[in-house]
Length: 314
Image (cartoon, rainbow, N blue to C red; front, side, top):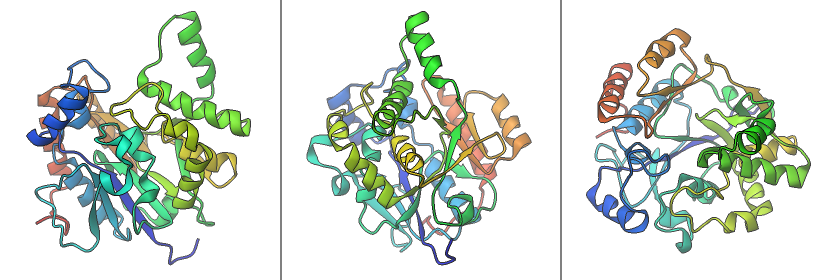
């Protein structure tokens, strides 16, 4: 890989505590429901995770060229927007009118390659994803500049889905259904079924691959663009990793707890496991199972883990 390779970072971010934004969401998809996996408080809650993720980025990946924060007419109150390395990208800049307003990350992710000025090589993460130790570009792109694609190993995933639905009579979660949608589309096109599941952490992409896959499945993606909230026919962004793999333009790595750790903030035991494994990447996953006290505990942890202000803060 060339030493002068430029790598950008793209975030999705929302401040679910903003009354104006809440009113917009409530008008389109209704108020949050405590038990809902697709429309609970944890889906939108903002506990300044982005601030700490940016601190982790500056600490451990200072070589990142530019940072794009994709939002819905919002700006973090603490963000120094005069910093030339960071730019807010509004949904209206990259998404067609039929998508808007959008509260569905699956749909927003289909348009990341539309960001003006985005480099060919980029990393993508949600605001609850963090780098935990020094990394280099080679941790994300191989010597040929191809993306390192990280999955959880699921060799019998197709069979597992079949047993769950046909034998046990249980429907798949919306999340797993969207992953299967992607895998089935790629299988139909390329004859390969990828059972690997997203590691739910920072991922590597080439912009040209992203655009290529979006063009291949333009018709199928177009049918989902009016899904203002997560829906079972969504196409998960795994498709932007499956296609490069099928066309031999990606390097597959299966993760373990030392490379990528997903911490569920309501599970107190996960904090000690994070300390034990000291992974390269970790995610602080909020969900319908978390309470406000869990979010406060997570925020306190992050303030201890990344105490120093970054240059991105006022």
